Length: 314
Picture 1 (cartoon, rainbow, N blue to C red):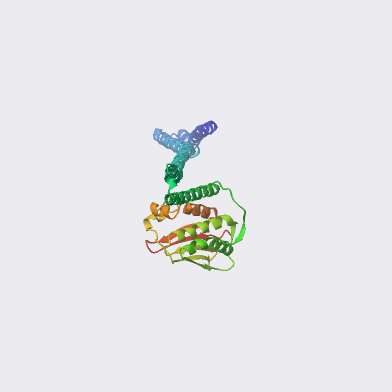
Picture 2: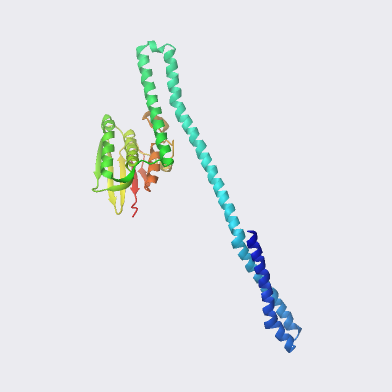
């Protein structure tokens, strides 16, 4: 920085001296020799002053672009970094608070029922059976929450599973087979519509996790006897995977926040169906890993369709 200031000062002084020299040789000296008078010399002085001012302006602009502009850019970058850091800290605190709340709720419930049983309720077989069932449900909910948190942590810290080309249809079919028993409990049919010869490069485990979350979400929020469509279609050079249900649907004002961690449209219903509030957030993070785009189309009582478009990397 100091060297640049010295160089620019030298350039300015040199430029002024050079300008004076040219004015002397080309303007002043001829007029002095032919005796054309003081007026011509005065005009020359004015033009010399104007030239010096213009030269100083040029040097000033140069100083701004080479010295002060980078400084202002650096200040702006530091301010932006500070703002991003502040936002990241806010997100971290919010996440920790949400995790604490989500973990505390089932633990408090489990602890409360255990204390009640210890206080004598265990002697009544009917109450004991009901309380043990509730403890089992809350324990299962806690287990799912911890599993989802671990998956999300792995994804965010880029701890990847095997990364290679895989068959999209095979991955979807295997995922559907896993979820069929859950769907059959509600008499829900899962229908497949898959184009031939679809392949993606990446982690097949992450892809299956994404499909599992989307299809399981569709099952949870569908009514008994309804249908779910799982499609994988070729769209030009892209592959579009979608999961459509006929369930309760989602109001448009919730669409933008659906993929936030712990965001729930209906908290009481989500708790009832065993949701952790992390399923769709995991879907979003996996889509980002694949460089895919994610969108939802839904209206209340008209079902929902989630689209994941995998773009060609060629």
